[in-house]
Length: 133
Image (cartoon, rainbow, N blue to C red; front, side, top):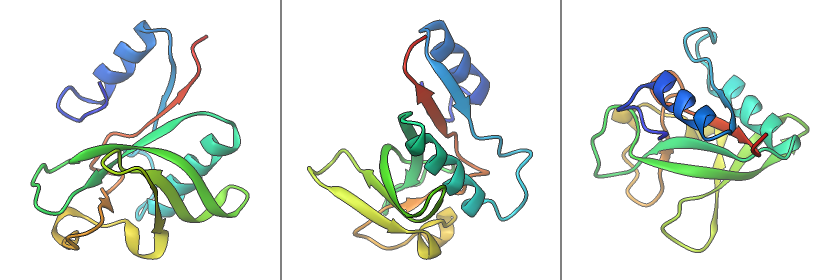
């Protein structure tokens, strides 16, 4: 549903058919670099109480868009301006903390073997999902 294989518009259409209120990051219109704006967009979803997911690259994988979809559970920073994202990788029973200064990377720069990197917002599909209508 959320991966890049079906395309962004397909997954939004499917989610809406499931009666979910879905918003996708508009990577085509966002100014470059867009990591800070994307993180602020995610933070606004936390502030609004809306669940959010985003894609990360995982060391050892090679999908050009994203390797794993993770839920955002919070952020550290000033209201709407995160310095760190808090997310669960769904592989362990703990929350991971990502410093935005080093987290957003493209596939070539994501080589650290122990933690994922945020995939480039312009390359991945990101969703913010509100409760059903």
